[in-house]
Image 1 (cartoon, rainbow, N blue to C red):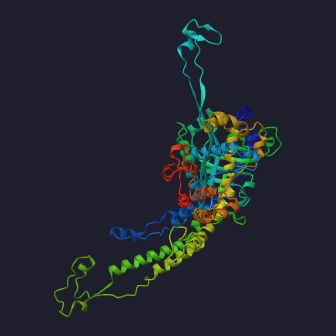
Image 2 (cartoon, one colour):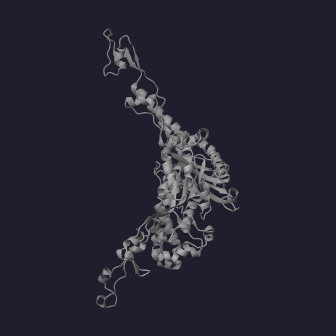
Image 3 (cartoon, rainbow, N blue to C red):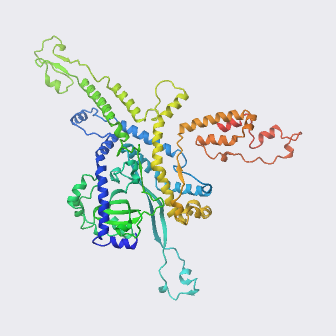
Length: 638
């Protein structure tokens, strides 16, 4: 923040224009919270369905006391969601790098592209990106919205360099010795960078708010985007000491009437007015912090003299205090959020997730299984018709091992006084019905047994199996490409642009090494920021699945075999057989075949030559790198 804005936010009473801006932001976020809260109940249910959570009743308690199975929830949502997430994750991580830079001009090739690729790969490692990706994909499959936020993080600390005694007693620059140790000045400290780079975090769907006046497919066109979390008051004070916030001492607790309206649409805990007032004395309480990225005209609120629309970032505490306000100094000029959705449908606010889609069918399957279990339990316990005149009912109801007959019982046979009631079990076909519904569920969702690694019954040729696998993956592959184009590719571009603008040469040198860093630094970090704003580089997604790559490799291998067996045809095509072999192995995951090349043979001694001038058979066998022409191609392919 600039000193002028810091001074405005530090005042005990907010300036009128700052208060008006804060009220506008709070009103916008509350409008979004009101719309988003309509989905909270469905999200709660979707999470319970995924986790197979159900409330226990009296029948479950009796079953547990008898050590019998309780009613259960068939975890079909868990299986479907995890299969979809696994497919998408493997589709994105099957390459060496998730984000593969595709240059758009000849100047982007060579060491510049390699430097950008090395930097973005380092960002993925430092941010633990793969774990964050799995969490976002899980949220998308369960709630149809997975939110990731990318920001810039810079941490450093001061250290005192080691100074030897000679340099302390003698000033090399002036050439004059110091008279006494008391005259020595304190050693200068230097700043050491602990970390600088992108910071990726997952935002809970319950804590994300966008301009709901537009459909989710057009959320980037909205006026704002925000997320909300809780911070301890002392953490906010530390941020103020570091110059990131201002005016934290003026934060006040929520008003009860304000909290009453907000609590119905709020999932944050520990920030109600009573809890905040209780810890206010020792400054031990939590604060609701809302980060809002909004498009505003700075001159309208006396922030700067600019009359152009800009994207600014604001920090609000308890909706009653603004703690920071600064422009989003990012070359991409976009919201730093990225939203993963299963379907970018512009005609719905928020379409159904995978868990919501299969929930009705899962409930039916669960009911069929539980009804079958209850019927089996009832048949095992049995219903017995008893004549209490001759049977001791107490021994029957107590569950004794022996059922006692009364003394006056005539000897006509036990079946005359005690007999099990025979009934017809209507649940015998419930498991078959459940299996039919589960097959229907797989048809509806597109996540079937082929994508789950299960092979359908019956004989199937290799071609039929490949076609079945391709068909099973086609619908999920559409989701993968949609998510890539709408969320992941823009996120990778933001991460790279952030690095090209804010990464220091010191860190850049650690990534690439001194020689390469010095050579490409000026191209990686241009002096003119406009070159980054108008940057056209993008990330490509190779949608070829592993099964499809194996098929391509097999087809190419067959072509290599044909060409190798016909030297005349190979010569006429002009194809590089070695390059084709390397491509086959690359499709199968084996890279850098050059490391297997044999060293060049040593010079042949004249004594080892045969009378005709050619090496003898024994010498040929002993030469390093000698390959049998008949088995050379097959050995390379196998």
